Amino acid sequence: MFADKHFLYVEDDPLSRQVMQMIMGNGMGVKRLSVFEDSTDFMSRIKTLEPHPEIILLDVHVRPYSGLEMLQMLRTDPDYSKVTIVALTASVMNEEVELLRTSGFDGAIGKPLSVSTFPELMQRIMAGESVWHIS
Figure 1: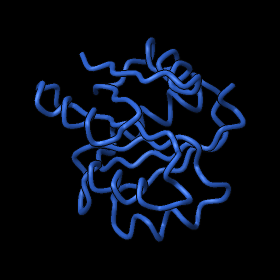
Figure 2: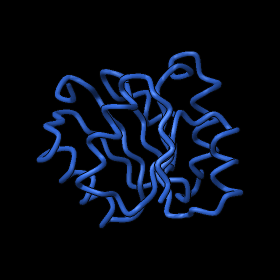
Figure 3: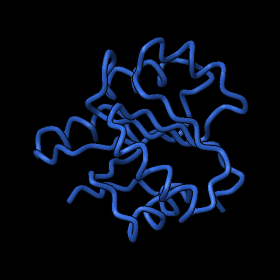
Figure 4: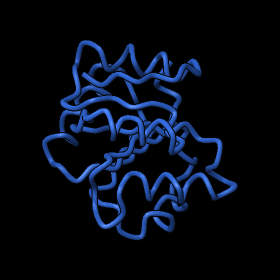
C-alpha cells in the first residue's frame, strides 16, 4: 500500500526526521520519502521532485515558512492544490488545532509520532479519511 507512494516530509528537528525515516522505511515499507530539513525555497524545491509527492507531511513550526504558509503555497498551485497535506505538530492547544482544521489541512497528527499508531493513521489518510489525531 505504501511502497508505490511518494511522500514529502518537511521537518527541521533532526530527531523527528530520523523517527519518521525509521517508521516509514522499516515499519511501512515506503520506498520514496523525500525530506526537507527546512522550508527555504519551498515551492522551487518541491517542483524538482519527480514524481510529485502524493502525500505531504508538514511540521507546523518550521522556518522560514511555517506549515500554514507552505499549505497556502501548495493550495494555490494548480499542480499541488489537490495533494493530501497533513500537519504534524507538538502543539495541542485547541485554538491551533482549530486553525489547522479551517486553513485547509487534510488532517493533523500530534508529535511525538507513535510507531504503533502512525502506519494505521496513514492508511486511513490514504483512504481519503480526514484524520485529526492530536493527543
